[in-house]
Image (tube, rainbow, N blue to C red; front, top):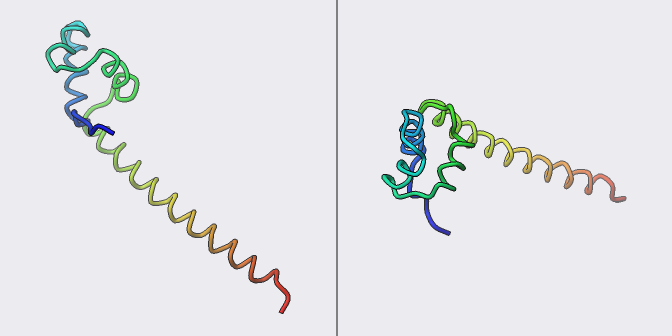
Length: 88
């Protein structure tokens, strides 16, 4: 899979350029990106500032860690239930 060409901060800058009056086609040509990418970015990052994007990234990382913790605890609970259900 290809790596990301643009960082979130750069994407926000590109979106702000389009808000200032340039057409989408001009902005995409200047930054060598497709209009499809532009509209996908607009759906994801539209109306955000750089600080909002950094906070979003931090929350996503934290959410991933919490999901791992829940998965580990679920496995522990299942294991303990399995051990308790056996007759010795």
